[in-house]
Amino acid sequence: MAAIARQHLDALRRYPDLPAATRLLADALGVQPERLVLTNGGAAAVAAVAGEIGGRVLCEPEFGLHPRGADGPVWRSDPHSPSGVLARADEHADVWDEAFYPLATGRWSAGRDGVVVGSLTKVFACPGLRLGYVIADDAERFARHVPEWAVGSLALAVLAELLASADLPRWAREVASARAALADVFARRGWDAVSADAPWVLVRAPGLRERLAQQGVVVRDCTSFGMPDHVRVAVPDSAGLGRLERALSRLANGSNP
Image 1: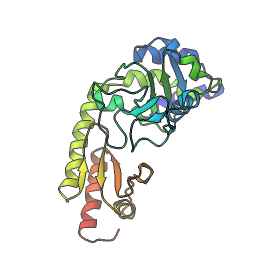
Image 2: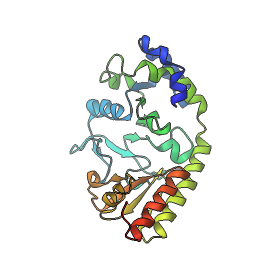
Image 3: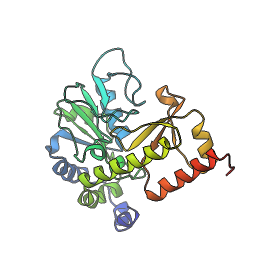
Image 4: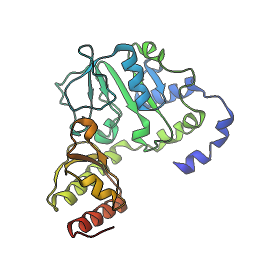
């Protein structure tokens, strides 16, 4: 990512060309450009849709940025956050948050009816380059909640190369394999790890986050989901898995950092 970005630093001297980038991404996603709104990351996509139509979550726990109204359109993350479970074919929602869907399935979208919010930031692991989107038949409704230059020029400049590099089927296979290895590391040490479809595992492990932090390993606290005794651990690369395994071994042996 850094190497690609360095080749496009001249974009910092230009205003963003949002229409060209919208057409490019629409082609990759297989939708009409008029159905697509580019946003400053997935969080901005969620905010644009929530600001226009509000709504409520299908069930709790659910991603914290989704609206919690008493009624209105139903929101559902797919795969579900934090459980990581993909939606069944017969499940219904009005707004689908597909931020992690490509990494879970190898496809850009399930192509369901309703509104979809997505995040290239998640797919390409580039949190500093904010790239999100909304797909909807009436996309102009949500575009009203997006600033004129919603995405920076550098993020738009690297978009073509990012999309060209995408190998979603291979990435999904690699995520599944790494997720199984990650769950096994916890299971062998007696932790209750739930491995579903997402690029993470959910672990019931009171106090583990703090203990791992002392070992230089950071995992996500699930208190915001109403699950203070759980952590969500992202699928690491092989080096990261080894680091986690060593940290868990030191904890099991009562070693200090």
